[in-house]
Amino acid sequence: MKSFINTLTNKNKMFKIKNLVILIIFSIPNMNFGQYTDQINSNRPGESMSAYSVGKSVFQVETGFYGIKENHSILNYNTNGYGIDMTMRWGLLLERLEMVADFRYQNERYNSLMTTNDRSAMKKTVFGAKCLIYDPFKNYEKKINVYSWKANHAFNWHQLVPAISVFAGANLTFSDNPYYFTPKGGISPKVMLITQNHLGDGSWVFVTNIIGDYIGTDYPSYNYALTLTKGFNRNWSGFIENQGIKSDFYSDTIVRGGAAFLINDDMQIDASISSSLKTTPSILYGGVGLSWRFNDNYREVRMNIDSGDSNKKAKKRAKKTKKG
Image: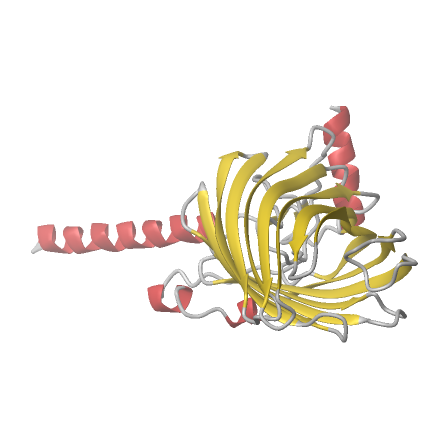
């Protein structure tokens, strides 16, 4: 009987120690690392823009090559060509601020019943800045219930709260541009509202862009882009995207899909294919790309959530670490 009581007592002690260890592990202060991620975070191969910046002092290049084919069922023309696009992103001044330069050059052969000609120009030249105005993960700590597996694996409603950013910039269009609706060219504003949700275990990311383009011109454009990305493992991810374009000059709905492969923490390659739903014109294009970042100048800014440190204190601590 005495042996049986000792056994129960030992089991009870072991249970308490086990719970205490679990509690200590989950009580370690969570660290907020700002917007910088250990692995490159590229907007490619989709057309949408993510809500988060690359991180202060980080420079990132996202570029690719694509082939394109168009057929117009009413005007009876077709085009075949290729293009090169490049986006440069630079984290400047603040962790949540990013400067953006976006370029696209296209070369194609235009064929109709009456004529054939070659044309090429910058199809897109945009300069602007993106700023994160709300981060749902800032100062947020998911509560852990050490006694309930079900509670810890239940749907986290906080995931429905998106990160929110705004983008403001300008389109530069040169005169006699065949891809522009007026031969004069000019400068016109572009604005964007961006939201981003991390769903499930974090491997699902949903991005929404609401865009006002060529504002103040004869043909303003109002667009949207919805992108759902899934990370399959450390190296592979895939995405699907729906993009809508509405203006008096050109309107369409485009569906897109593709995948990306992480070569190392600072470089990825990608491939994608896109198709329009309309036949006026029908558009089919596919491409491959590369994203690379330079982050040697980045200095990690940490904020201890549990101790209530302010961002200012965190930056001071980071500077001391750098000096040391």
